[in-house]
Amino acid sequence: MNLLIMGRPGAGKGTQAEYIKEYYKVLHISTGDMFRKAIADGTKLGLEAKSYMDKGALVPDSVTIGVVRERLSCADVKEQGFLLDGFPRTLEQAEALTEILKDNNLKLDAVLDVNVDVDVITKRMVGRRVCKECKKTYNIVFDKSIKDKCPSCGGDLYQRTDDNEETVVNRLNVYEKQTAPVLNYYAKQNILKTVNGDQSVDKVFSDIKSVLGE
Ligand code: ADP
Ligand code: ADP
Ligand code: ZN
Image (tube, rainbow, N blue to C red; front, side, top):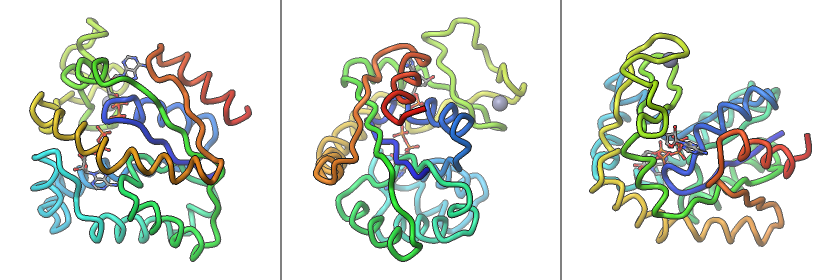
């Protein structure tokens, strides 16, 4: 199965991706995670991406499309299937993805849209904490038991530098202008499946399973 997961920043894409990859045994490919790893590793790609990410702007299409093309051309993608998270974010990326899939003889089965209103998002973003080791995501506002260690692996939790109120506002604006039109691109292909993301994590996942067929 080959899937995309879309939604506003903070909609719960990464959280649902953890469940989807376990359940459907697909590879989770997140462009945000790839960029954050490049930054942590201090690569040239990381240096370039950081300047955009810190402002809440998109990394240029030319860079991002190259990264995704390289990853989707690996043999494990074809063998296992994938869940692409955070890409495509512009119409140009969506069109490039269509080409990349064609070149690798791959087909998209469904595009999930996790729909959450803007006012809910802002609360989620400032409380988000991420594990440095296993990359799992938590929320200190909604779960008071979360302190500074990962309950799953014991790693240190950190706050993403782009999860401050000002950058979140920019990212939401970028989403409305550049990413929302991508939903229409997939609606026209009849593969867009919208789920209500403003529900418990478990309920959102059970809705995802029902739209995908278990
Ligand atoms: P969120 O899950 O909160 O939306 P991501 O981890 O997907 O955040 O992305 C974080 C940042 O990484 C984005 O604000 C952007 O700067 C960069 N980024 C990730 N994916 C893309 C993409 N497909 N195109 C351009 N920039 C991207
Ligand atoms: P995205 O990848 O779309 O940016 P995340 O999965 O990182 O979003 O979730 C953003 C924040 O909201 C995290 O702190 C996460 O723990 C929390 N969160 C995710 N899903 C839900 C949900 N259904 N209800 C409440 N909080 C959630
Ligand atoms: Zn962890």
